[in-house]
View 1 (cartoon, rainbow over the protein chains, first blue to last red):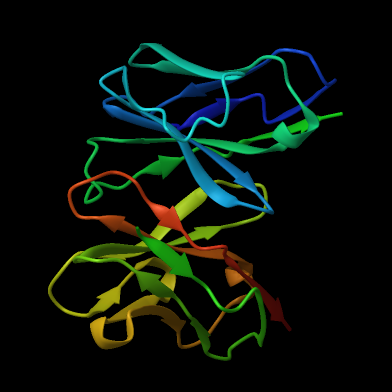
View 2: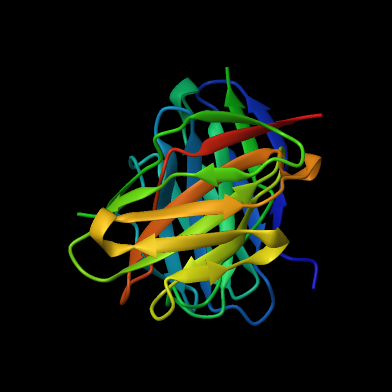
Length: 115
Length: 113
């Protein structure tokens, strides 16, 4: 398996533009997580899906952020409109189940820069 | 609420020397504890985890960690570091019945020749 695949790896956009980050989880994994990593706040869980259904989006910072998982093999995280403070590395992770005793595998991340 | 503290932001160690990374957690019940490693430009990789049982846990790449409930600590160790161990290391804690992990701020390890 190729692991969790995220695209793009790097994204530079202007403030106010819409940004869409993409994630393909490992086949057979039922849980998908979106994390954000910044110097100031470290790693934060943004949203969690189980069987394509959003279970907990309490970590989503604002209404400008939205996430979807239309099927078991694809998820998107959208920011609209983007702001400079959204600059961060966004990680997607997947695991077989939602329980912490099953390992979560992380993608390589998308480094977002909003100028 | 759960939280994790990694007191050391940056550690420099010589190749072949031993390494110990500190992690202290705050959690009201029995925690699940994890150590992850992040190499530059990469995602996080699980090194080891503790759920219950033997308090000394063996992981990949020659790492081990010891859970000490009395000290609320879960320190990571490696007897002899290799240049490839240069990376950022994250300690994390989670509840046994949930999926939410709380990560520490991370410790960056530099290995000098």
